[in-house]
Amino acid sequence: MVELGGSRPVIVGGASVEFYTAGSIETGDVDIVTSADDAFARAMSEAGFRRPREPGASSRGWIHDGLAMAVEVVGSTLLDGTADRGRVRVVKLGSGTLAMLGLEDPIADRMGQ
Image (cartoon, rainbow, N blue to C red; front, side, top):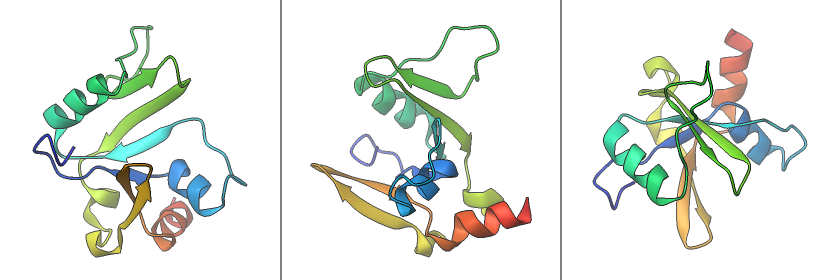
């Protein structure tokens, strides 16, 4: 994303909880927050993801058939602007990096719901 001119998307929700619990709590998809929709769409397409065509599918969702994985953009600001972007954790993964909410933020968000 950064190489394509966008800001770094952030993993939120269940996928961040799954990461922090080392898989003890599992999720069915990856929720993303990004304000760079065009760059994100290009990055997803280049990575082999496609928009689902099924009736009722999310207009902001992506699936990867080979990975049996779904990704959905759930917003353009972290926790509707209440999360501190300085607490976002950047993790090295293979030859790249990914960003996710700090451990406390998904817990506080769930408690608030």
